[in-house]
Image 1: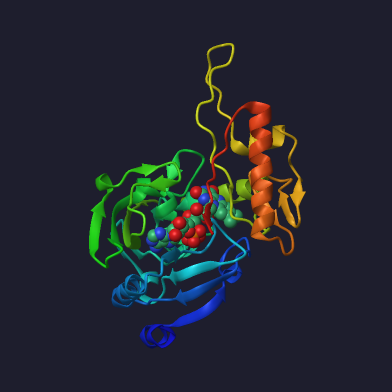
Image 2 (image 1 turned 180 degrees about the vertical axis):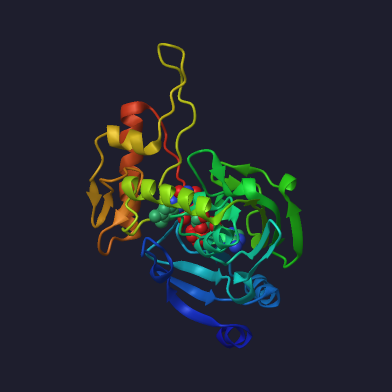
Amino acid sequence: MSTEYQKKFFTTFNEPLSRHTTFKIGGPARVFAVPSDKEELKKILSLSRKDSIPYYILGNGSNLLVSDRGVDGIVIKLDGLFKHFDFRKNLLIAGGGIELASLRREACKKGLSGLEFTVGIPGTLGGAITMNAGADFSDNIGKLVKRVEIMDKCGRVKWLSHKEIDFGYRCTSIEKGSIILKAELKLKSASPVSIKKRTDSIWRKRKRSQPMREKSAGSIFKNPAKIGTDSEGVCPFFAAGFLIEKAGLKGKSCGKAYISPVHANFIVNRGNASAKDVMKLIEETKKEVFKQFGIKLKLEIRIWK
Ligand SMILES: Cc1cc2nc3c(=O)[nH]c(=O)nc-3n(C[C@H](O)[C@H](O)[C@H](O)COP(=O)(O)OP(=O)(O)OC[C@H]3O[C@@H](n4cnc5c(N)ncnc54)[C@H](O)[C@@H]3O)c2cc1C
């Protein structure tokens, strides 16, 4: 099996996934494949089917907690042509493997607005679309998407238009196992100066309120939806971080994993925290928030066991 994989595309075995996640946590991937184009990707999927080995798509690993045992499967990281991008008037056409930060910078230079809210989101375009990454409850990547090109698990390629995709709160209706190859984003003309001003202001706000320099996977939990009405009939909204902080959990630790004192919905790895430490902290947080407020927190991050 090894030679067959090695012959076909750049592949390594037992690659530590801690090198590929922003948490810097995660055991080895049995196979780590880096396809450069659709043909290579298709071959990987067909080997996965032939050998009955599951595959996992990795973006920048910024929304992932990978188990300490790693992944007994093929981890696929898009490279080469999947990192290309181009502008056609107000349309940005980009590969699923390119980082949002590069797209945001290039769009700004072209005088195209829309991606400013992504400043500080360390993901790829494919990961951002999968998660419908967003900020401040109003902006999300789904709003910009015109259409998305995907490859399904059998290697078939097709385009999905915006209206064929449901963009939810940190999720989409794109079928599990489908790989986002490319997307077209609709941007708006604006002056680079105003785009930069808005980006800088969002960035400053993030730096004040989130532990941007520490190893994390961003928000651990989704913000709970409506939780009932108060005495005046108003439906209050509580962010997950607010609930965790009110539960007195800021700074709580498990091994080297800490609930960030800066933002309670972030768990940070201060050294060599294990996935087990993080999971324990997650479970204890859920338990305490439920005990104090009767609210069940749900995970925003994805877990690879
Ligand atoms: C400091 C920090 C701040 C953050 N702030 C925010 C924020 O403000 N808003 C927000 O929404 N998120 C935020 N995040 C979380 C994260 O950056 C986003 O969810 C990001 O979009 C994930 O992209 P990724 O490429 O890292 O995906 P990964 O973490 O690698 O993967 C996430 C999921 O997407 C899948 N996936 C990745 N690429 C593809 C593809 N091409 N095709 C199909 N599936 C794919 C993976 O299999 C996995 O299920 C933050 C994270 C950090 C560390």
